[in-house]
Length: 253
Image (tube, rainbow, N blue to C red; front, side, top):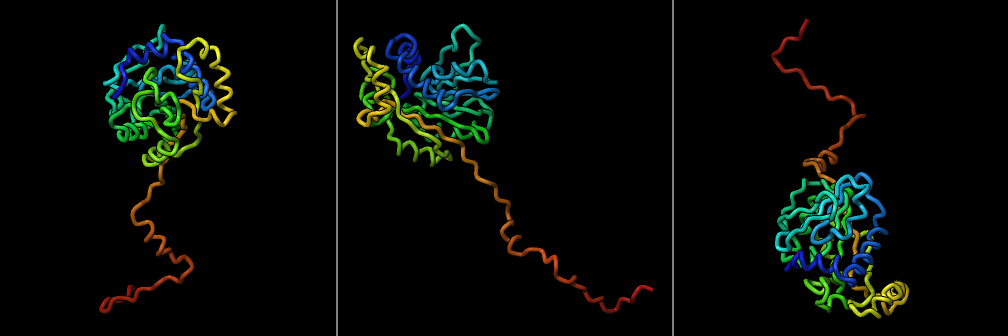
């Protein structure tokens, strides 16, 4: 079940823990995609906190918010680019999107298969997608104080298998958000240090979220009859075949 858009807004924009989580995940996204010059970037679920860096150079930025969640205008102080949509029927043309971000859109959906099919449809050839989901092994998925404590958490293998079944090829994968989901001032002060330790100390490898970059796989088309044509190649070097003249027909003088 999708969370309410007001709860998501309050967490990411009005709480210290939410702003810290937003920064960590967005910084990792920018390592994957430092720019999107002239491209169409879309986000589904509640991905808009991650899309702000692309407003300046992208051709178009679109925030898709599913009906059960609700929608809010975004970005603040600029022309609105967010839109309310059906969970499995997005108002985008096939192949329009170059880069797609899913956050709080897959693990909370009751129709994840249909969501991934819609992701595949809207991405153009060579398009890429980043999926952000709660890590089954992380502590954020065990706390209902944050949005990552709702829905279905994933292991890396589970998410890769689901993406593969829907025509995506995994390019890169990381776990991040190692700081505990605590509002304690002590933990807030130590958050940066914990994030650094999590990247280097094996004990902390179970980050709160998984981020997977996947590309759209497009199979080469097969024309009907082509294998048979290859089996019967043209006899280019063979002598021409002369058909005998029909009986009863006088030769032309």
